[in-house]
Length: 317
Image 1 (tube, rainbow, N blue to C red):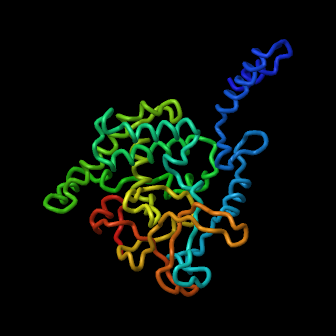
Image 2 (image 1 turned 180 degrees about the vertical axis):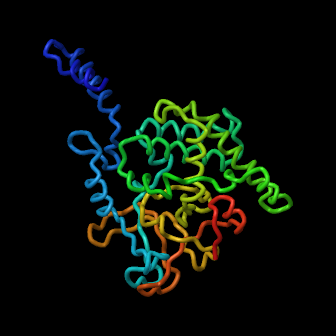
């Protein structure tokens, strides 16, 4: 245990340079086993997750969401005017759930290594499947830890997420025959199977994964993930990827199929005007002058209405 390692390292009977080096190593191992990720600003001085500190530092690192729920809780509207080319929302990368930010650090490394070797080692030849694995186990690990994102994870829209097509009965699925989403049930079932087949690689950090666990993770990704476009300078080398942005405010943000109305998320490096520091953020950029009170939408990517219905269970403008 971490307590035993620290006790052994601090023992007054430990003497000599070699033993002191061993003691230092034991302390390092003990600290590396902490569930809190200091690299993401989540730790207090005691090693516990410090929720207020995390969100304070997130704001210092650029967190800004310039919209709120509309009247009577319907839709989302701008809180203040936003001029063309300015950010409607800025989200530091430390808030995004994905393989690059997964914690603990050992899981992050395992997920990155898995994605690099999955095609040859596990025969996962479809890129979307590899991305799904990384995102799903980042999410499951976060949900099973002491996390700064607990409010988002416990929201009924996240905690109770389900893939619409997987809830259909055999008789209801017959209605899909001959449509563009005829294979949706088989596709989603195969995604759940992939998560179950790869779960053994991450048991150390995630624990046992049941079919219902895998189906929940898939549902959260289908319903609440956002397509993050790479920085404009990297779009020839990098493809857009699905990531989770665990902010309760974004759960209210409706989607729109027109990319001219629904704003996409993209990676940017911005200069903070006050601190003059560069900030790695995910942003929504206004494509025209937007007045206070303007209804806001997010673009979900290039999906048909039918595809989104099977994933999310709803109709969209």
